[in-house]
Image (tube, rainbow, N blue to C red; front, side):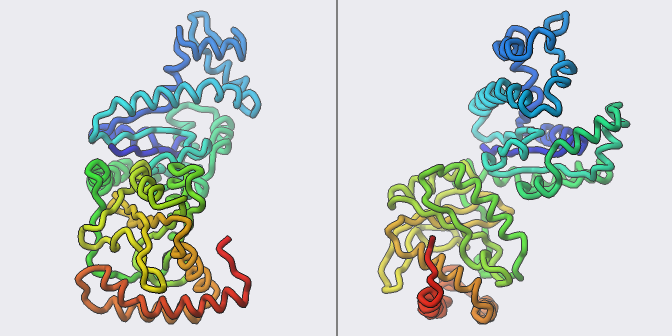
Length: 401
């Protein structure tokens, strides 16, 4: 099963995308529909609303008068919070019931208008955001829904802006043009990403990667992507993760690298690391064993500076469109400190970044049997770099705090 969060600002055309995904076979859960369901006549949700807001929010027919309720809560943070305290837990429980009853191979799309505002993005292995300009959304609200223009602007401005939505978006679907183009983009997303992502998760199978190193220029989006992945890992790990860090070459500004986000999680011990790797399936990541497919990084072990073997666990992406390595290390392992030291030394030493970049490009021009062989050829440079980084740490007072 794959759970997908779908959101977008009011008037962006999110419902169009949800319908198309449903036509492809997705199980679409509409949060707005559930919000109506949990306060239908005869529910304890409606009774709770009456108790909180009074009988004036009920129509003569016994249903919730949404217009009257909206006048009480719109623009009033305290009253809106009281309503949310009634609605949200019931919607969450109903959503949980639907997901629990879904087939094992389902792609479950949860249509949540306020996914960003309510901080729900880390709970989903993939988040799709439907975007359109504010002017286009205003025209749709006024023209298609007959909404008063001032009311439409108020509702648009009450939600998160595009910058906030982009921070959580693994996929940004631009719905500012012809609807036919949007539908074609959804079709392509379904075929090339969602279907293989779900199958990889269900089969506990890493997404395929090139067997040869491909070095690309530094991408300024890497830290933002790492932040989304970090939030997902923290959502799963809770307090069991002592720290989660973006590490490796994509964590060093300006350093060319393989387009792979490396993250490091520090936990209590090796058993906790292995358990965490398995649980990260909820974040769209799968544990990797020692007999990995071609192109995967090598094994669930590190090699210490003295050549010793240091245990760790490894989880990688099931998502075919975003390569990720999550190195889960026990707190007693010295490897996690070395990884942070190398990263921070490189960040502070532009000459070393240029030196390392040249080495990477030279090595990538060779042909390798496995990615491990490429990594092994970098080892002498990294060993020397760590010695230089040790001196830098002593001079600057660096710590892995």
